[in-house]
Image (tube, rainbow, N blue to C red; front, side):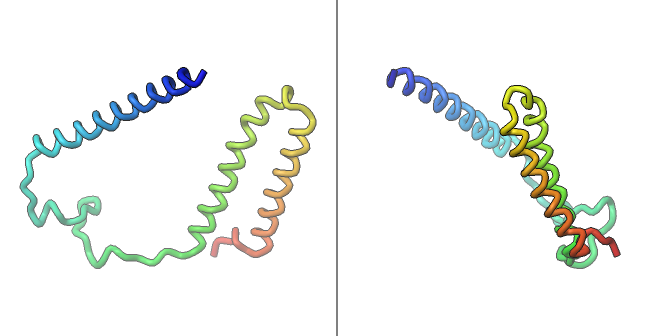
Length: 122
């Protein structure tokens, strides 16, 4: 039993090493083969054909981050709900109750965000 266990992980380790070797060989070969002649024009940032003006730093309003966070929360919710919905008949009533609790917590968070005015775009 233990020999089979070690053999399985040896196979995984061999494929991982082979993958890392191939990636390293590709990167090393591209570094050797590619031409290298940098110029100031090549080193300048590209902004859709427009000459770059100013510094690269700009301030972003916090509301964008909050919208992104809310999107991620509801995206992760979908990741949890879809497999649950596919297997609902086999996992039973306990899973239904658990998912209802999960959805109620998310709805409570959404109501909180609405009451705090997070979703108002000004």
